[in-house]
Structure formats: C-alpha cells, structure tokens
Length: 117
Image 1 (tube, rainbow, N blue to C red):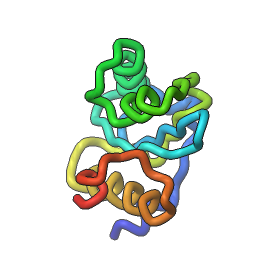
Image 2: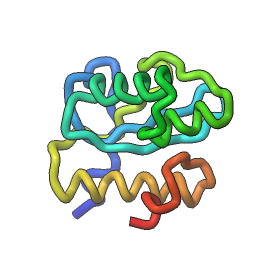
Image 3: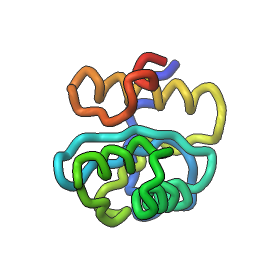
C-alpha cells in the first residue's frame, strides 16, 4: 500500500501552500533533515528559520546548522517536497520511510530517536 505513495516527487515551487513530507538539505554539508507537517510547507520552513535565527534548538535542522556553523539558505534552494498528504497515519509512515532511507545512506540529520520510530 505504501508503494503507490513513495514514488512521487513534487515541484516545491508550486506546493508551498500544501502539507505533507519534506526534506531540508544543509547547504554546507548536504546532510538531509526529513520532516512532516499538517500545515503549509512554507509555514514550517519559517519555523526552522526562526529557530536558527534566534538560536532556539527545538528544530533538529536548526540545531545542526548552529552546532556546525552552517548557513540556512533559501527555501527554494534547500527544501524539497517529497509527498503531499494530509495529517494521518500514512503521513507518519511516509516520513518514517524517508528518515529510514536517509539513515541507511548515512545522510540524515534527524535525531537518533526519530530514526528508530
């Protein structure tokens, strides 16, 4: 059942107002953070930026940037919409799949507890 959901990638430019699973790529080291949101992608990205700007470590992505002295970059350069989906179990499953995929590749920023879900 998940197979039909994991094959799509979207043009982020036209999907910022939607919700679902997204990936943020560190502009300096190319490590990837995978997240999900039931709100617009643009809103969630702005929260990551705010956490970075004000040294708030609630966002694992912002924490990675701050701990390593990396820059944040523009949304259109570092954010990729992986799946458009409303809140629910399938959204959680899709996020976990992509966290696992990046963990296996040795490329994930998500904290270790997140990647074990």
